Every structure is written in C-alpha cells, then in structure tokens.
Image 1 (cartoon, helix red, strand yellow):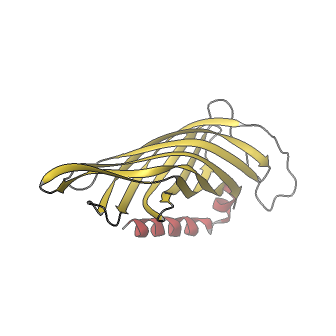
Image 2: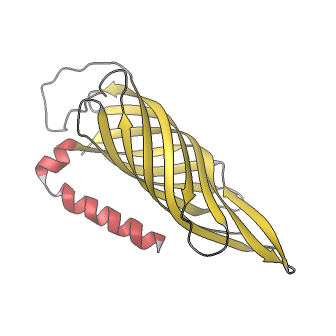
Image 3: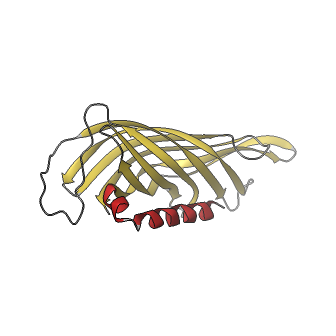
Length: 205
C-alpha cells in the first residue's frame, strides 16, 4: 500500500510539472544523513503481551519537491526512508507535507535553468518547520523470537535548519527532523518514529 501511495504522489507531481509555469516555480532535491526510523508495537509472545521495538538505522535518505509561496513561507512534499546495513533493509517510510517559516530573512531564490542574466545573493536563511502526512512500515528480523512487526499511522513532525546557497542554481539545506505517528492503524498499541540529522541539495526544474 505504501508503494502505491508513493507512486500516485510522484505521478501527480510529474503531471503538474508538465505546466511550464509550475516547473519554473518549483524545485526538487535529495536528502541524506544520519538517523533512523523505528516501530514500537505490543505483540503476544508465549501468551504474554510484550513491547517489541525495531529500527532501520543508521541512515536516512529521501526526495523532496518544494515551492516558495510567500516571502517567509515555503511548502514541500517529501518521502524519506530509513535504512540498515547489516543485513540491508529499508522497511519504514514517511511521506508528508511540510511548511517552513523563515523567521529571520527570506529564503534564497533559485534561478531557473533557462535564465541567463541574474543577481546572486550569497546569504544563509534559517527556518523552523512542521509537517504532517502518513507512515507505513514493516521490519523483519530472521531468527528473532518476534520475526516481524508492522505499523502505519498519521504523522506529525518538526524540523529546523538553514538554507545555504552554493550558487544561483543550487543550495544546501542541513536540518534536524523529528517525527512521530498518532491514529495508528489496528487495535494493538503501536507507534512509529523518526529522527534525522540530514543535509539536502535543491535545484530548480
């Protein structure tokens, strides 16, 4: 189900990007860094309720599509996944809508690829943000007494960071991301969480 939701999300974005005016006002980027995503769920083991916790760490990666709709506010759609190296797995994903508030100064403006003449202003812009969306996850561990746990829910998250332009058509975004779920599916108590120290790169379409 999570894969279907992500596929529909990207199809919608690609459809909108067919509009030239839309494409000129949006930018896209990749995200990567340290952190992880996890699931905590109450399961029955030998007739007794047990809280099982699993995580996909130590890394997070993802993609984002973003636009600025006022001098101090920006909006983005993101999909992020946690991953584990040994053995490799990435069973937990967060897909959400994000709003960023640039509280000290407006964010840097990326110049569209077809613009040849422009003025480049090299300055940092700090932001705080919040997000909401959905998360789905399934983590399996072979040979464990609890071989598999899964969960899904509505997410809420917070973040803070800074935009630093490398040039007029690319900037870096180091940020801290914290998210958790509520309204989790099913009658069994469960929760999902995310923490990341990540850095993203954004460029215009």
